[in-house]
Length: 168
Image (cartoon, rainbow, N blue to C red; front, side, top):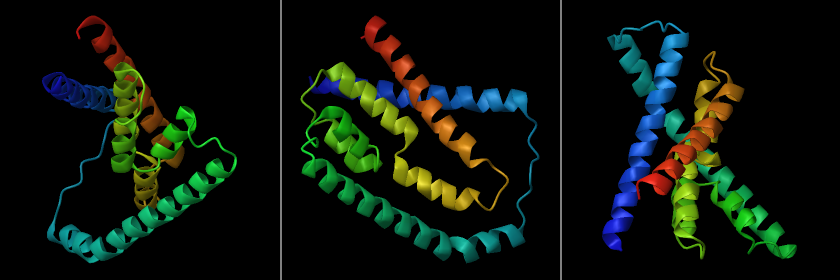
C-alpha cells in the first residue's frame, strides 16, 4: 500500500510537470518573449526589494488564514462544515494544510488523488494572493493568471484521471 501511494505521488508530480510544459509551449508558440539580460543593477534591486516581498508574503498568509478561520466559524454556525465540498473549498486556501486535510478524507482514493492534483496545480488562494501582490508591478493580467491556474488544475486532473483509469 505504501509503495502504491509513493507511486501515485510520483505520478501526480509528473502530471504537474507535463501540464506546466503544455502551458509553457502553448505560450511560447503564441507569443514571443523579450529576453532581459541580468546585470548587477537588477540583482541589487532584487536584493533591496526582498524584505518588502517577504513582508507581503507573510501578510498575505496571515490575511488568508484569518479569512479561512472566519469561514470555518461561519460554516460551523450553519452546520455545513462537515460536507466535503465545503471542506474542500476551505482546503483550497492554503496548499500545505489543504493537502494534509485532503489525504484524511474518508472517500475513494481516486477522488483524493484528483483533489490533491487540482490543489497542487491551482496552488491555493494564499499563493495566488502572493503572486497577485507581485504581478501588480507588471503588465501581466490578474484575470489571466487566475484563469490559467484553474485551467492548469483542470488539465492536471484530466491527465491524472486518464492515468488512474488506464495505467494504474
